Amino acid sequence: MRFRRLYMNLFRMFAVCTLGLGLVIGSIQAADAVKSGPQVEEKVPGPFHPLNVTGENAGQKSCLFCSNGDNPVAVIFARNPDESLTKLIKKIDEATAKNSDSKMGSYVVFLSDSQDLEAKLKAMATKENVKNTILSIDNPAGPERYKISKDADITVLLYTGRVVKANHAFKGALKDADIEKITGDISKITK
Image 1 (tube, helix red, strand yellow):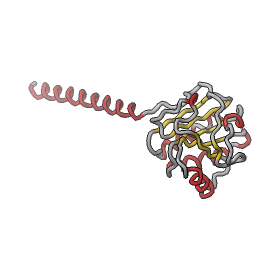
Image 2 (image 1 turned 135 degrees about the horizontal axis):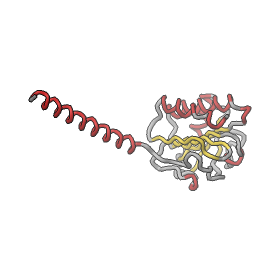
Image 3 (image 1 turned 30 degrees about the horizontal axis):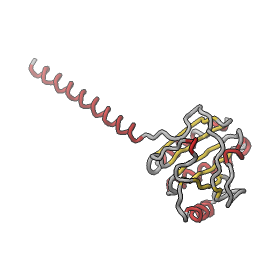
């Protein structure tokens, strides 16, 4: 009897500790989650005019939102170019080419005031053979109405008919699983 009571007390203590650990891990993950940009089923806020580094209007400020109209669009707002972001851009570029029949467009807006960013982006586009995705630069806060979180290093919006169908926001570098999830969601806009 005594052994059984001891066993039950140990089991309860283990269950309480496990539950507590789960709550702590969940709250840490929630703290890392970032809400940025218009959310799913919200309308995309509208025109803004970043400096186009690549594409038809390279060297000019033009509205990429406007030029894509109601077509399916993948837009990435990013703070810094890095290897994981470059990998995502290449995947988005491939998806844009693959979905040209549905007139899919894509662009990346770097939120930065770095003086040498334009040259870095041109070099990256050439080196990585980015042909279908326009690279552009806007101010560090981003377009005001888009409400891009200052805590988000990367915000990805997938939209069609000017309504968001998927939103992904990240703090820090992307993992391969993040890139797979984003590219998997492209089907939500190209149906």
